[in-house]
Image (tube, rainbow, N blue to C red; front, side, top):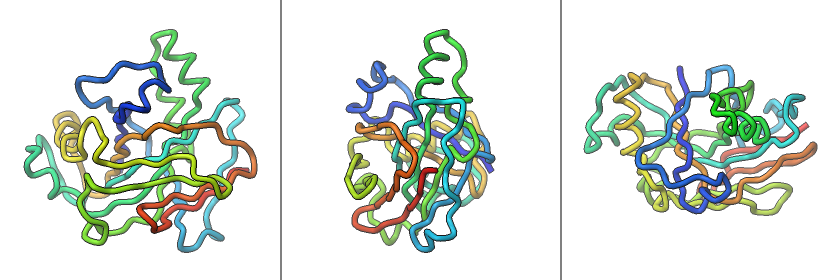
Length: 210
């Protein structure tokens, strides 16, 4: 199982990164060891996230995550919707200070994105219960306050475009996850933060920071 993530896929997020609009999807990989589940159904059994000692600026990035349901390579964008049918709200946790340092030196920044527990997913639900993939609203609350709100119609590259593009380089396999990018509003996490992720009005994710 692999995790493919997309950077810089919402225009209002670009100024937060001081980045121009990309001409093609910006992909990076998070290892399977980065995956952690934080479902809203049984929050008491979720593993807490412990702030790492290598970063003083850990940021949350709330995203729509789709799960691949069959093998695919060089997928035509017209047929990309056949390769996923479950969706959730996820968090792409980022060591922003480390990422900034590595980018300024022109170095790869995977360690700022792919560390243990940095890919958080909530409960997956079937797309036939949510509506069209490019017509979804999602949000993140921290300590009862909404800090991020996104609408998938605002994506620079649609989910189908991302699936098709990624399949040119990586064979997609059943169970692979694709993080589709974060809207504006990213920010820093601190000890005792309580994160709750929503797809529409449905709570899918529950995570506590230690």
